[in-house]
Image (cartoon, rainbow, N blue to C red; front, side, top):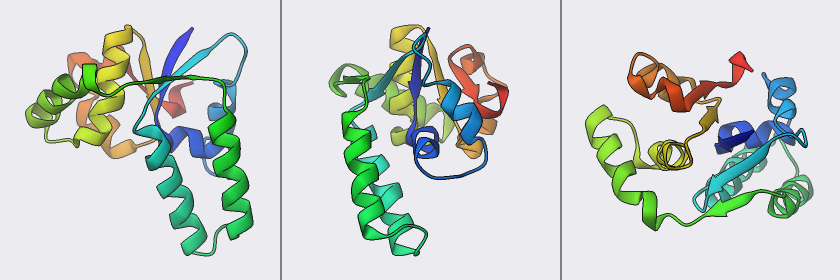
Length: 138
């Protein structure tokens, strides 16, 4: 099964957090994972914040970034999904950054898995729920 995973989910593969066991289920060989290019700097920024707050050491952060870069998934170019992401953001008041992931899921006809509760709650009552799944529901 194909899934788009956002950075809020991917960080759970490396750092103990709520829903880490649900996130780990996505690593099954039965799943093909997809991310937009945005994922790489967004993920690195989350790890940087954890290092800055003292939740991780700098060396741990380095190892996590390296592991994430080695992950076997498909990384997609932003250009084909930027306009739909922008239009979705304008229509819903959510960020283009979050919408990049959802626009990718729509383009691949699969689900985006998120642990971003604010984004999920903002869209759960819309027709987009077909392409959006809360990590707690895995």
